[in-house]
Length: 421
Image 1 (cartoon, helix red, strand yellow):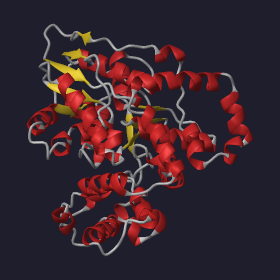
Image 2 (tube, one colour; image 1 turned 90 degrees about the vertical axis):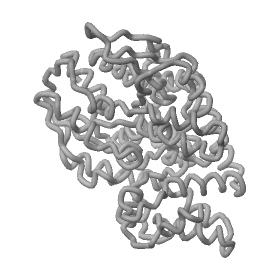
Image 3 (cartoon, rainbow, N blue to C red; image 1 turned 120 degrees about the vertical axis):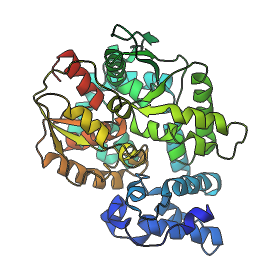
């Protein structure tokens, strides 16, 4: 960690790229400021009190600074290592610990999320959700609980029982290859059509598609929140499950999950017995946009006459450096007008669990994002990460504004099928 800290030359290129620095103009809420705090902690000149801990907690981990840094500072590894130390050694309040434990008791477990989703569906369908929101009743609840309610997605009961087919044959005379799809946790529970669309498009483009049974969480939420041991348990189980079979690629359609899957080698860097297996797995991982943009399209695209704004999810654009590929896929759809969101490199405020743990900051950052999205008057928002979609939709809902959102793969799926979206 000391070597990584020393890479920072304090040039300040990271400052305009950092959402929290732009919000508050506080040096300690910038990447180089947080690196200074890490250095002080390493050298023992400061202590990890509640003030110092808050500066780390208020970091989104959006990795905008990693893209902006001319010195190649691995801030992603630094903030993850620091958060792991915080979770191991720092003292959090009882309410903070309880809330964090509640989130991690459900979100990394798809089966538990499905159970939780049932009362959420009934809450929405009964009209109680509308009543609670209109009356402003949420204002008397703690900010974190109010935010959890605001982020509740619209889900149909029939979707909760949907099961992905374990095998889908290529819809071409001869298969081009065989791929596995990682179904995710939030994605498979609250956005099941994204996985279904992913399978349909891959099959239409000539690939046999396998959805391995028994796969669990990839560990992304845990890793980004400093719960390293938990993240490694999830990652190891997923690797062991998927490495049993031969695939040309392991496909993921959620940006935050994808960046973690590709980081498995670094996650197990200190585990000599498992590191090579983790690295081998990571080399096979491809984001769905990345994978499809790298092959010659076979399926015919039908026109979609819509003005579409593409939102750069941070863990796709900054962590994985995937920007041109989703734009290329969308631009290949006849009559689709792709428009750029101003200041598009900036985070939406979701950042995994950030909008649950730091709702006030997340809202401030999200409001800027929504202002920029609405400024270009799109008819549809393309978003490649479920957390981003939930965050932006919650702010639009609060404003009383409607803008449909879809994953790029859903838009491509509609084009191939000749279906409206």
